[in-house]
Length: 322
Picture 1 (tube, rainbow, N blue to C red):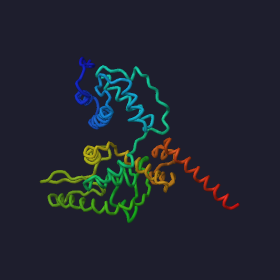
Picture 2 (spheres, rainbow, N blue to C red):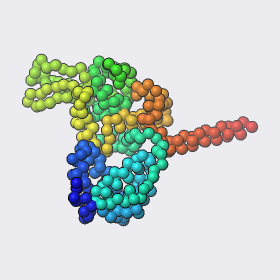
Picture 3 (cartoon, rainbow, N blue to C red):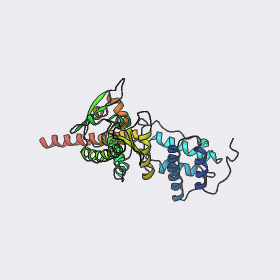
Picture 4 (spheres, helix red, strand yellow):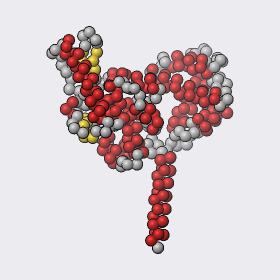
């Protein structure tokens, strides 16, 4: 039992440090970082609005400000999650205002998936990335591969202008063919230069070392270098690419976020049919693809506006013909 629960704190900063220190005993480091990032944004928003930000004394006015202003444009599921997690830190310091308010959220208009916003996607692509970070990010964000498909990709699967991808499925998995993104040749060239350097260093020490046929490989140690392929069961590739990128950039995402963002960006471009996106993804039906791209109310409103524009253009043509 925590005997310090409810004890007043001087500021939200000190409260947040206390809360995250306790949370780190029960959740992983990424979740702790995500909490810090989200909570800091919430408390700062209250500060900037001249409202109460001490978790011990935050009231209905502050919660309504977060719901109606700060989180206004988020989906119901996101607003519900923000409210729930914010309620945890308030309750830790004796404040049960969110439970007392009994706020009810409407049904979400889309499946609860996540993706990068267009600006976050651009910011991520503009990051100063290593050659390994660049190719992993490119394969997931610009070609739509799963992280496990990135690990499985072999040199012989990469052809002139396209790749053969071994996806999910029984035994060896289902194969599909995916064309290059316009930037893929450049990204591959940069990575292959690094890959060849790693192999050369390992061969210099150990001439008979086994060289993996995987496109993405690792090299360990300086004096006695070893090389190998990333295990499909481990998070080793993620820990030295995705996790490091989000720590540096402040953009919070997982590997699958990049794959989802790929599909949604194609769909938002208005140039690619859902069936085509489904084919690139390797989905057996378009229902799964629709979950990935996450059609929301704004998207539906845009679609109806487009329909209205089309209908009006037909009316104009009809009048012009009379």
